[in-house]
Figure 1: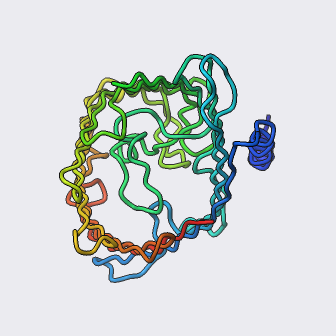
Figure 2 (figure 1 turned 60 degrees about the horizontal axis):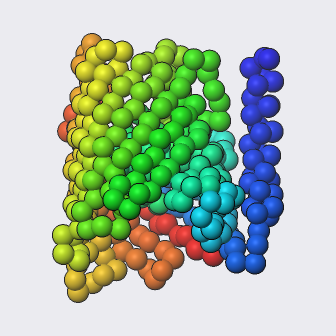
Amino acid sequence: MSACGHRRSLGVLRLLLPALFVLLAASGSMASSRSHLYRELNLALQYSVDRQQILASPLPPSTSVGLEFIHSRPPLPRGQSGLQGVDLHLRLSDPPGSGLADLYFGDAWALFGVGRQRSQLRIGHFNIPFGMNPVMEPRGIFRMPLEALDLGYKKDWGISWQRESGEHDLEVGGFLASGGDLHWRRGSFLFAGRLGTPTYRDFEYGFSLLIADSPPTMGDVRMADMMVRRVRAGLDAIYLYGTHTILKSELAAGTDDGRSVAGLMAAVDWIPPNSTRWVVALQSEALRRNSPGDAMDMVRITAEASYSLGDLTMLRLDLVRVLESSMGTSTELYFMVHHYGR
């Protein structure tokens, strides 16, 4: 198939997928099931302190409008299998420099109970089960888990199996290694798994493994045609200190084509006791690759203040200081208005 024909096929598939998920939810509807449609608006701006220039933000989620359809059903009786939920999140965005608005998927998955109690199968586009990725789900926020910096994306197209035992939760999955792009390149794959404590505890931790053959990717953009064999092991932890402070940390190490890679992320979120509409956060990330010229080394610190205008709208201001990278140092300010609700 020609490149033009392939792009047309992917465009048709993008249009068909939303209808497929809605039909799937409708086929699994019952009296006690619930469906909701949410509207989303992101207005994101960047101010370069070095260049003294205001630009549209290049960081996700960038300026966009979106819709999210969520369908859920009550837990199935023990031993039964069937549809448990559907999540379809679509955004229309105009990435800086592209000159053309693009429709892309945030979440697009269906969740099925598979007979045994607390076992589930997820199919579609969703968080890769590695590190803090499945736990830390940013929505309308610039700060991301370490995987977004290391792999270039945090969601992928694939299938995963989840099992909850009460003491530890296990999720393993196989993916296309394409990021946000619904496209498979011959030979590319990503397998990942995470074993961790349930997310409702004051102290959460997890251990993860990942192996992939994939091209360098950033979001849904392929940066090169070369394939890279990636192997990672990771540890992550979240601790709720008191009622107003959350401490987060993550460590990942492994190889890219046999060359060592190591990454570290640490963050703290604090809610002032006398003003719960405010959240103040500080996050630091460091990624080191043992490659010629250290082209992908990155050290950055992000300070964030956010203010809630009721239950639906959030204002955010981020100061991002890059201390080391292949592009040199920089200081940027990011401002966002995020609205999400029915």
